Structures are given as C-alpha cells and as structure tokens.
Image (cartoon, rainbow, N blue to C red; front, side, top):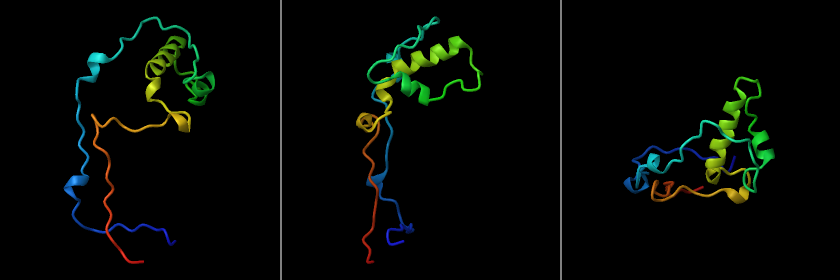
Length: 108
C-alpha cells in the first residue's frame, strides 16, 4: 500500500514525448525468404528448447513447410529475441528516443 502510485492530472512535458523515426528503410536490408527452408538447426542463441517453449503448431494447424518457414524466420531474426535475461537490451536510439517517465515532487 505504501508504494501505490496514483496518477495526477497535469500537462505532459514535451521533452518526455517519444518520437519514432526510421534512419533507413528496414525493408531494404530484410533477408529474402526461401521457398524451401531447411530443417531447424539449433545454435547458442536459439536452442531447441527455446523453439519448443514457443509451442508452435500445437494444434496442428500449420503444414510442415510452414513450420520450417517459421523456424527460418526466427533464425534470421534471433538477434531481436531474448529468451534469457542476459540477452535483453534496449531499443536503438536511432529508431526511438530514450523513454522519460515524468514524475512530480510529493510529500508522503
């Protein structure tokens, strides 16, 4: 109860606004998809256990080739995944400004 946060009405500071920007077109550097993806090959960052934790195709909705394509896309984008605390990071400042959480002085 002593750490409860109550919102206070007021004007949002302009310097706390977050602006999104694109320094370049991300589609220009996107890897092309293959029509015949290979079987999933685990590595240090994206392991077999991590893929199982995603529970892909648990009800059998996808075809086997679609599951392979999903594994391929995950492999291409594995730098953006964080399955462990040591892999987490922040958004690039070239895309998003740092977040500022405005607070006001108060008396307990």
